[in-house]
Image (cartoon, rainbow, N blue to C red):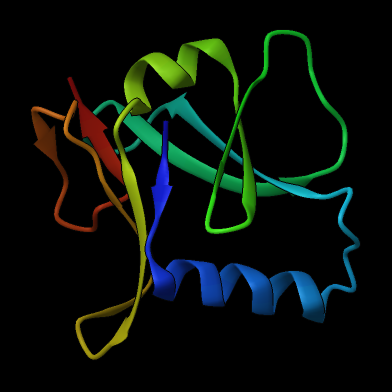
Length: 108
């Protein structure tokens, strides 16, 4: 399961409202090969289920993960920062043995 902080929920809600997405849309979180640590995080909005999707809901946000990504992201917390040290979504992944400085990629 992926959990979402209050700040991340607020930003996701804001992005969905700005794009005029209805309640058929959900947050798709995935892992792709690449990045400076070997695997990178990917966030997107989607409204089409794919075979093998795992669905979770936290703080009213519906989240989809494919099975491969679920194995890497189980227990992850999604946060949002708008501070001086960088703006954007941050993943607090207990499965990562190493993360890059920018926080966008990791290895296990």
